[in-house]
Image (cartoon, rainbow, N blue to C red; front, side, top):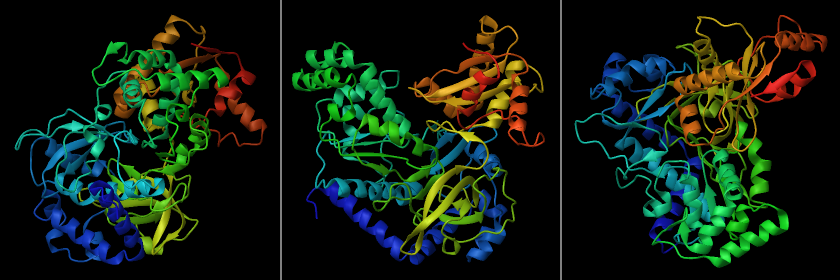
Length: 549
């Protein structure tokens, strides 16, 4: 057992998480009882008669399955200051995330939920990481944690308005069980905002013994590696002068050895890697499933030979799976986080809302190899919530299914967590055009790069110019309006500005004919407002002239 209290706590939490996989039934009963306790005496509980519910079957009969829109009215009441709406515990914040309708979702978070569920889960997750690294104590500078940041947002006063912010921004700890790592007070962990926030982290940790880099989305790590190369000249000067962004900083001294090592690496290969900056780097942690799996090769170039370990499958609404072993992409269901139900579906599920009375399966009834839509109930008040998320069962850990996240139902693109949907794109273009409907002569296509971004492909008779650029700017503004996470990623520089690619009138028709000549039925070839890969960009030059703007 480690003599470091923090590491000892991590290891104990990880041990308990693995024990939960072997004997989950008592944990599930305890969670279910707590969900009922949190709902009793609330507006939602009264509306659904939850005071009379004692069994799971009664719970399922009383509460219909619903997506976020079925909770929006209740959340609006929380925003207006009403108490005991979804939970007995008063929400101290609403975490904002994108909704499938283009309207932001606001997910309540309470001290009870953080102290009893989310906080302990993070201790267990980080226990795996420290165990795999063989770290018996934490030393300042061992970790670069980009999964969230210390925020200067003040905790609300009792009776005051409930603040709204992203789940990755958090003020002080809310209780003794909440996740509060020792690096919480380190300067690099503070959310400073602005375009140079990521560079500031690199500079403050440049001379440290960083062993692991942790993010939720892999795009954050690739941005880190590319920034290291893009701003290498500035970094070398700061390292040599002991400055930060060219300005003196009392926390920093000249680091000639680090600067020389980076200069030598650049002279040899024309690029530097994260391993050149931190020679003892031994682990990268981020999502590794669904669209995140396509970052593997990029991460390997930025940190050659460094193992990649999955972050928990987690969203604003709650944690679903927890990594407990060496599996590269899937973890067991986190039964200590909530009540989980499953609906069989195809991987290509259209993402339409589930029927309110849909039959569900328990985690013990799932079949390895099959895919399922997730319905979850968590102590933040979202009960029998249709998440829209699809999981594949890839095995079992003890008595629990090992689940790999496949993605969201419907057409969704997400480089950095923006979760852009076809409805977002259609709404943005419709507003930019200024009519209630628009002809199918536009679409948005994801495009890899540093940073990644999107291309607006549009039939434009006059070719590229001021008018096409102005239209692109209107679409960009509307995408930011209808999708708050797209706006956040653009503001932080994690997504490139929307690019425009003009094509001649008739190009999309030619594309349809191209697919028909290759054997597709004309009735089946439908216009896609949002593409989930960049195949279209390689097809267009063969069909018609295109121009980038």
